[in-house]
Image 1 (cartoon, one colour):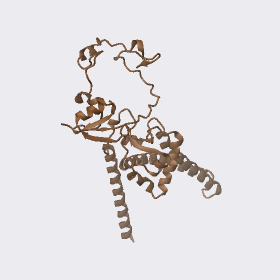
Image 2 (image 1 turned 180 degrees about the vertical axis):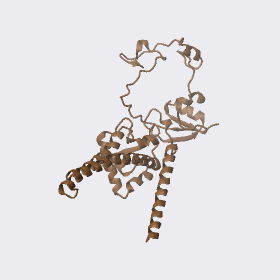
Image 3 (image 1 turned 135 degrees about the vertical axis):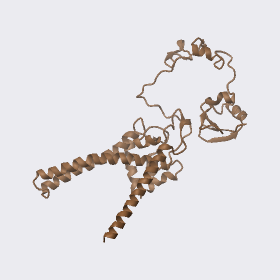
Image 4 (image 1 turned 180 degrees about the horizontal axis):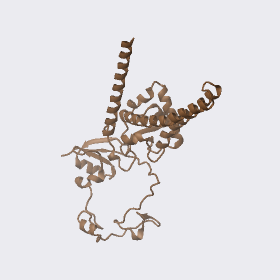
Length: 318
C-alpha cells in the first residue's frame, strides 16, 4: 500500500503513514481538507480534498443530494438543493440565504482588490540561483534603460558646450556637468523605484523575478508597502558594499534570506507561496532559470576569452 505524508498547520512534514492512519487523523479533526498531502507517484503536494475519493474520507450523506451518484442531475440543472439556513444578512456566493443553491456561481471578486496572504501552507523559498537568474534579467533591463537615457543626455551636453562657443570654457563645462548630473540622478532614482514599485505592486516582483516565478513578501506573506520596498533598496546597497557577502548569505541562511532581506523582514519565495494554491509551487530551478544561467555563464566565458585575446594581442604588439 502507498505510504502517505502530510503537512500540519506549522508546515512540518509528517510520515510516512498508511492510508488508514491518515483517515483516522482526519476523522479525529487533526487535519482538514486543505491539508497538503503527498505519496509516491504524485508529481506535487495536493490538498486532501483532491484525493478524498481515493482515501474514502467522505461518508455517504444522510440528507441532501448524493453528488457522487447524481452527476447527471447536476449537469442538467435538475438537482434540487436542500434548504440551507444562515445567520441574518449572511450570503453565499452573492446570493441570499433564501435563494442559496450549491450550484450558484461564486460571487466575483473585484480585480483591484488584493487577496490576503493565505497562511498554513507549505512555502517554497526561492533558492540562490533563481535569484541570480532574476538579477541578470533585471540587470539587462536597467542597463538598456541607462543607455537610453545617457546617450541623448551626452549629446545634449555636447550641444550645450558647442552653443557656449568653447567646450573648454567654464560655461561649457558647467553645462555638461549639470546635464550629466541630472542624467545620473535620474538613473539612480529609476534604479531605486523600479524594484520598489514592482515589489510593492500586486505582482510583488520585478520583471526578472516574474520571469523565473518568484516574488518578494513580508515574513508573514503579506505584500510590501512602498516605503519598506524603498528601504529594501538601500539595504540592498548595504549588501553590495560588503563585498557581496550580503547576497551570498541567501545560499546559506535557513529561509534563504540575503542581508537586505533580514534587515527589512522580507522573504523571496515561489510565486504561489501564501496563496490558495501552495501545491502549485516548484521545488526545482525551472526552465527559465536554467536558460538564463546558461546564457549568463556563456557570456562571462566569452568576456574572459575576449580579455585574454586582448592581453595576448597587446603583449605581441609590444
